[in-house]
Image (cartoon, rainbow, N blue to C red; front, top):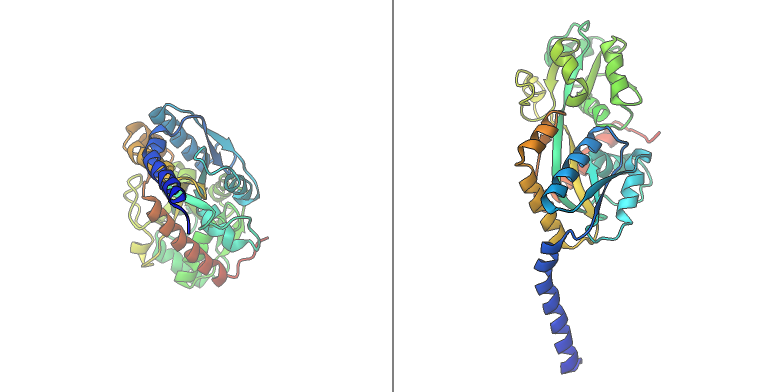
Length: 325
C-alpha cells in the first residue's frame, strides 16, 4: 500500500491540476494558433476558416492563422491535425467530407472520425439548391420526378466530383424518389455550374454559394432547397421535403475540431468564444454573403451529429455501392 507521503503527494498533484484548469483556460491562448484548412484558398471551407480565425484573433488578442493543406480528399490536412500536439494550438476545420464521407468511401483512412478529434462546435451550414437548366421541362420537384421516371437514365445531373456532398445529395434524391438519373462528375463546383448554365447537363444539386446569382437571375431554374427549412436567402424556394419528398434533408456543414486529448478547458474556451462570435454582425454578414448560415452547438452535440452523419452517409454509400476511384 502507498505510504502517507505518497498519498499526500498524489493529492497535492490532483488538487493543483484541478485548481490550475480554470487558470489554464483563462490564459489560453498565450501564443499563435494554427487553424488547418484541408482545402486550397478561396473555397467555402477556407472562407469559413478565415472568417472564424479573424474573429477569434480579435476576441482573444492572439493570432489565429489559416494553414491551407489541401489534397487527398482532405486526408492530408486531417492527418497533419491529428499528429499535432493536443495543446490547443492546432485546430482543424472539419466537414462532412472529412468526418462522414471519406471514412465510408475509402478502404484505408489514417484517422478515426469519432476518436481522433475533439469536437468544438459547428461553424456554419449551407443547403444545396436543386437547380435545372431552363430548357428542362420541369417547373418543380414533382415534375422533375415525373420526367425522370419517364426518361430513366436520360436526365443528366452534374456534381463537383464523385463522393462530394452534391453527388450524394443527388443519389439520395434518386433513392428516395425511385428515379434514375445519370451522374456526371466534374473537377469542381464552378465547372459543373458552368456546364449546367451552358445546357450541357440538366440538373445539379449545388451549394447555394456556387449558383445563387445564376438561380436568382433566371439563368438557372431553382426548384427546391435541400435543408429542412426554407433559406432566408431564397424564401420563395420550397424545400425538397415539402415538394413531395418527405424526410429528404441534406446540407453542407463545416465545424471546428482539435486533436484528440486537447484539454477540456481549451475546448470550453474555444466554444465560448465561438458562441459569442456568431452574435457578431460582421461575422454573420461575412458568412451570409457567401450563402452560409452561422451555427454553434456544444462539443457533445457536435460529437453526436458526427456519429449520425457518419452512419447516414455510410448507409447511403453502401446502398448505391459507391466505390473509391
